[in-house]
Length: 370
Image (cartoon, rainbow, N blue to C red; front, side, top):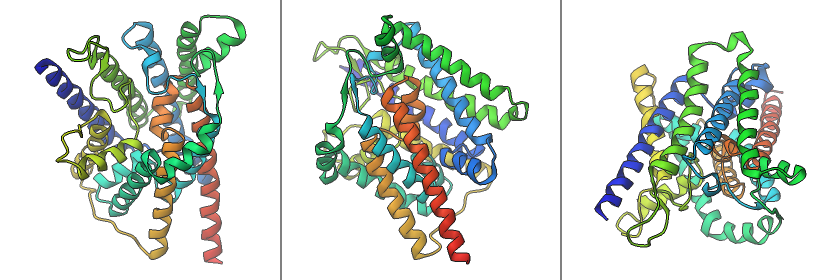
């Protein structure tokens, strides 16, 4: 049992270290999904969008390689399911995308901004965590389970791109999904890198760094932290994960779990998890970067309207993130690297929701100036 405890601490420590680097890179390079969408819509600038796309391509190739080398079992990830929950993914994604614009950033950006001294993001963090917890186990969870979660398509295999194509063509689903990951990931990488102006150290560090760290998290939780036989249960176990499955990075449910751990710290049934360490690590990494750059500064709300916008956005992100089973990192970079159909729908819905929200914010601004 002592060996299990030690290995669990090592998994948590590795997760924290990876998240610190994610926070440092995100703060230093301004890696941000919401910012990427706003840049494209408002300025026609695809730089940050290409950062995100390249990171996704790297994550896809890395996940496929880990599966190919049998270092992880793709059927044991958090995203592996034979239920294609397209309504939950679409509704949750739309809510999250719309909310993240109102709240000035997604879950990861909120943590990065906290580390840089933004008190507005601290409020968003608290409200996001509470609304996410309610949607996991509380009043909005009942609403979620009895509405959107009742609609799904059962598939003979895993609900991912490879299994879907395999069902149509009669190929091996596992092998096809792996090679689809290689192929699609490579196409995304090549599409981004063909733009010569993108080849700057900041862009490459943001893209390759974040994408590579997602892959490293898959390895930590799915290989390094895997025990074939737990000494107590004699069953396979993935140490340190809240789901008991292989996890990468996500920042909605883990924010709720962080608040849960802090509020019930004396409860011996509460344990630190990979998700909680990821949340903490991103804040620490961002703080380190901002202090080093001497850009750390306290920032509060400018007006009551500013506060109300962020509160509504935080609620939409918390409820939507759990309903859609992830955020721009959860269903985005982590989930989409597995080629999950649920993740694909959620990411598309997040983008649509963000686009609608950006247009709404611009319209509000124009009305206020008129």
